[in-house]
Structures are given as structure tokens and as C-alpha cells.
Length: 169
Image (cartoon, rainbow, N blue to C red; front, side):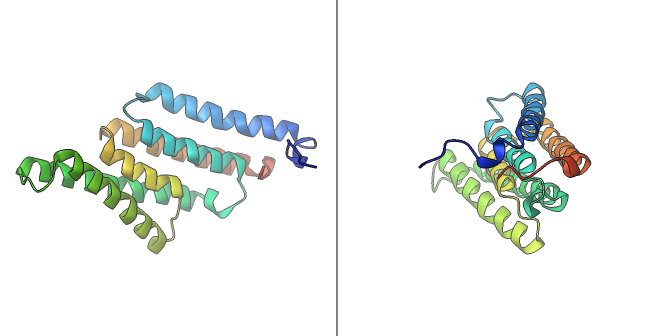
């Protein structure tokens, strides 16, 4: 017979509720600070990270090295690709349209971020989304600051509460 609810839920209702509430509050704060529409890709990545942190707090991918390191790589690569795209657009080289340049650099951002995360042992899948979001969205220092503060806050909450949290998955 197919089951609808996770078997652990009955025994750990409080943990399920509290951990999911922590993810909700973390994202609500980020959404209030940033313009959710123009920064949707970046906030989407942060939302995916909150899922990882608060549902899998004991897994390797939730460690601060991967959270913070992955986002630093993603932000650095996204920034590099964003400004490379801007410089190419200003050069008025017309092999392809400006929107095609942007898509091209967004793809490069994802691939390069993944490569650098893998070789630096800072793999955090949502951080590749930040690299892409910085190229496709509106690059600004406020977004970068909110992402860095947000991921540091969530990493700190995980460290502080890890002994009280369980892996929900």
C-alpha cells in the first residue's frame, strides 16, 4: 500500500514543524530585504539552500564549508560573467544579439561555478543558481550582501541548532 506521509513524521512532529518554520522565517527575511521579482533566481537558490540546511542538517552538503564556500564561488563567477557580458555588450561586436550574449554567459557561469566548486571541495548545488541569477537578473551589491548574510545566518542557525535537529529526509 502506498503511504502518503513520511513514517518518521508521527514520532517527530515538533522537529518537522520547527525546522520547516526556520526555513520559512529565513526566507521571509530575505524576501523582505530584496526585491523578490528582480532577484527571483538568486532568492530561489537561497530557498533551495534553506531546504537543504533545515531538512538535512547532518549531511555533508549542509556544512558551512559547502554553504558559504559554494556561495562565494557562485557569487565570484556570477559577477565575473555578468561584467564580461556587460563589456561585450558595450563593445558593439554584433555576432549575436545582446540577449544571446546574456544567455551564453549565464551558461558559462553555471558550468564554471560547478567546476570551481568541485575542484575546491565547496559543492553546493544552489550556489550555481546564484551564478546564473547574477548574470540573468539585475546584478547589484545589495543582492550579493543579502545572499552572503542570509547563507551565513542559516549556516549559523544550523550550527547552533544541529544537535536539536534531525534529518527529515
